[in-house]
Picture 1 (spheres, rainbow, N blue to C red):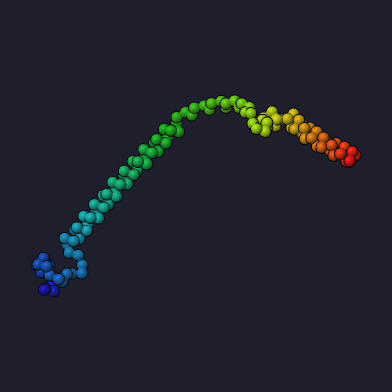
Picture 2 (cartoon, rainbow, N blue to C red):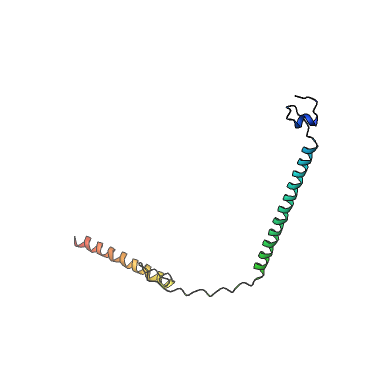
Length: 119
């Protein structure tokens, strides 16, 4: 086991190692950093191209003319269970509705009076 930190001692598998990186380790770290930087640059370029393409597609869509809206389809009267259609919701329909219930109320009131007098 050597404590001098010589290159021969380290290559021979000695246990002692200097606490700082040697020239080969520094060169390897520098190459790894450069490769990572190059990869991130390439990634940024690809992302920038994709963003430009998406923006160009959006602009092309915005430049296309918008088709005019079709006319609203006719609303046909459907036969509802209660008979509340567009016609019955009109002013005339409301008056007929009120008169019918007034007639029913008067009929009940008249029958009650007749039953009390006949009783």
